[in-house]
Each structure stands twice: as structure tokens, then as C-alpha cells.
Length: 236
Ligand SMILES: *Cc1c(COP(=O)(O)O)cnc(C)c1O
Image (cartoon, rainbow, N blue to C red; front, side, top):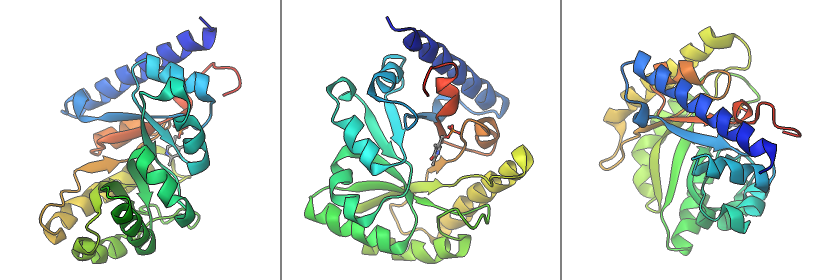
């Protein structure tokens, strides 16, 4: 067995333990938090080690890498999440491969996904990305744009909006991250009353290697973790 497999299994165990501890400290059930294991830093063999270590949900931020890995037979058992920007010309190829897109960041993208999903006769499960940090280089809806969009969701019958996603500000550490995550949860709670029937916005995708414990405290239901899973893995 190549040594990276043991290393990855140990990293996964440690991350799961930290997720459970953070959940319990927040009075939440550890099972209420899903782990999206971000495989973008590694090739298919290491991604397969994640699968073997009990991480069936893998996240990729670039559609091209998603196409390559998801066609690898050893990874046939994975469920794929797209966590980065989706270009409109990649929608058709992406939709059949993924179980969730975290990063729908404009009404135009939502509209295109709806049209293509209709053509493919499938229902696209998505999260709406919100820019809670104000970082100019980050994508996503502003909070007001998100609230304005919600009543229009019935215009997109082939899209199932499951919740919201955000990334914390790059600067400011955990204190600022906590504020950004609380803003997403607050927005979700406020948005509930604006939501058309059948839309629940249950999922809150927030928290990465540096700040997932803070995110769990603030209500994350999905954490997207990459770097921590490859600690000590050569080439990652
Ligand atoms: C890369 C990436 C992650 C994982 O980040 P780590 O800090 O390596 O855990 C999470 N979310 C998104 C959108 C990413 O692009």
C-alpha cells in the first residue's frame, strides 16, 4: 500500500474527529455536518484514497478537473460536487456528473443551468453563492441580490435550490470569518419568509481547512475541506 493512503486515512480520521467535536460543542449532531473532501490538489490515486477512507463526496473547483477525475473508473463510487465557478459553456457536460453545484453566482448562470437541465431532462441541485465578506475578488450574490432573486425561483423549474454557500474574507482570521458565516445564516433565516413554497434553503456550505470549526459553530451543514486532508502527502 503506498504510504500516502495511510496518511490520507489518518488525516480524514482527524478531520472527522474535529468536525464531531465542533458539532458537539455547538450542541449539534455530528451527522448534521457533511464533509465535502476537496480533491483539487491531487490526482486520481490520492482522490481514490479519500474514497477508501470513507469520503464519498468529493469536491472540485474546476469543471475540467471534474471531467477528468469523474471519468476515472477507480472513482466511479464518488459523488461529485462542483465548488468553483461554472462557465456557461461547461454546463451541459457538468450537470450529469454532479450531485450538487455550490457556486451558482448569477441569475444568468441560474437561467442557463435551468435551460440545459430541462433539455437533459434532469433536475439540477444547486446552492446560491453569496458574497458575505465584501472581498471584491470573490464572486457571488450580494445579500440584497439574493433576497431579490428568491421570489423568482419558480421561473427555474429544472433547478432545485438547496441552500446557500459562502467563503470567508481572506483577511481577518476567525473573528471575521465568524461574522461572515453568521451573516450567511442570518440571511438564510431572513430569506425563509421570501422563499416560494417547496424551497427550503436547508444547506449552508461554509468553512474550509482554516475555519471549518467556526463555520460549524455558526450553523454550517456542509464543510469543504482540502488542504488538511493532504497534510504530509508528497506532491499535494
Ligand atoms: C479549494 C477550496 C476549498 C478547500 O480549501 P482548503 O483551505 O484547502 O480546505 C473550499 N472551497 C472552495 C470554494 C475551494 O475552492
